[in-house]
Image 1 (cartoon, helix red, strand yellow):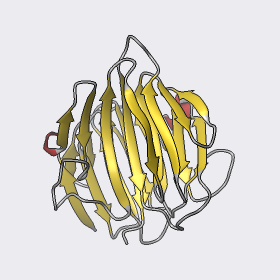
Image 2 (spheres, rainbow, N blue to C red):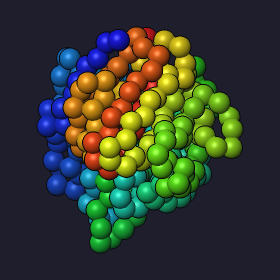
Image 3 (tube, rainbow, N blue to C red):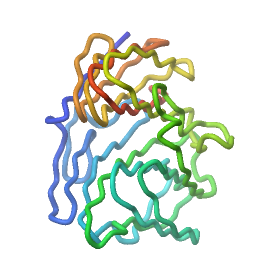
Image 4 (tube, rainbow, N blue to C red):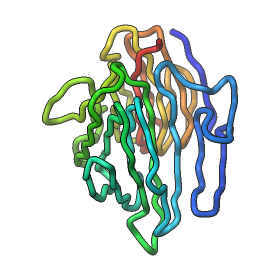
Length: 236
């Protein structure tokens, strides 16, 4: 088993007034040669967007993009004709593929939105762009890791163009749980959304992250009520 620990306080930071962003990996003007990616995970941004503000129409291609609202409401529009609003417990997945334009705005005029935006390199290039959003209830994630994104087309997950799996879990304090690697050879980048946990002997708190690879199973000892995101990706 190999590990790498990323403290929340050591993330990149950019405050644009309307956008307060924390970057787990090099992004825009933030560059750390030791934090360019974890396997095929390229971006994990923890963004707070001011009311009514957001990202205007801009292009993407050949990237798998997953958006997870933590609080507030996000308005999405894209060049495929999709228009929608996503809220906490909803997940958005988009294959940029051969190319598309999209915008993301805070739908509220009075409250901030906090969201995670995650980019993963694709398995196949230049596929037809694709968009999806789905609701996953609190019960889906309670006391277990619920897979929300996977490389399969099924009713209870969202498809991703990569041998990657995203799983969310919400756990009570003083519990122990194991996460089993779902695709042989993958590693897992674990992001503690809320709470505290001991992950394979590493004490982690809110917004800390740990990358683990060359193992088939990962043990979590939950210290306080916690929400944990596991992003399992190929390592090369």
